[in-house]
Amino acid sequence: MGMKRTDVPPTWDERATMHTFLAYARATAAAKCEGMSDEAARRAPLPDSPLMSVAGLIGHLRWVEHWWFEVVFLGEAERAPWTEESPDKDFEPDPSLSLAEVVADYTRACAEIDEKIAGHDLDALSAGKGRHGDHFTLRWVIGHLIEETSRHNGHLDIVRELVDGVKGG
Image (cartoon, rainbow, N blue to C red; front, side):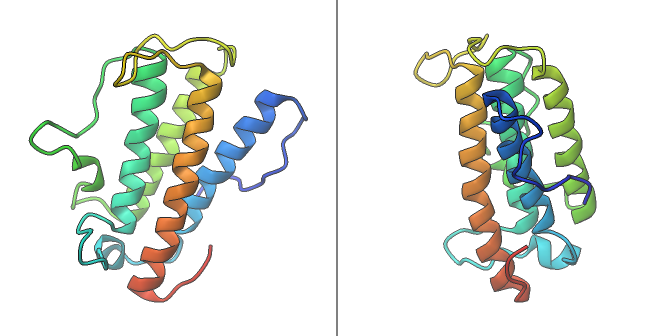
């Protein structure tokens, strides 16, 4: 669904390596959605996790990217769907959107974020702060998104297999 999938960087410097691993994790998330029906993508097969659907996980990944790169690192205004009353709203994509549209929104948001952070040094500190008042380096934010996206890729594997039997991706 649009993202190139490789874990081999174009050059061997730290920036290219980190960005390649992030791009690979993002592309893997998108690939795990290929061939899935919209109805199946909205099913949450885990009884104690009613928001854990494929579409919900992709929506969450999209807004986690926004939060860490645009809000915390760049200091931009928050526009995520979550609220105090509904803190997990990012796991509930607009029901009028197809899975392809949810993935396309994620892909577009990632590309826009890549453009915004391209000129920043890995050691640059975030404009915003985390929950505990910490500033973060861009290196840490990229590393965190590699970890977060990769962890959710495991969730995507499990949910997808439980919903429609498709493994891997």
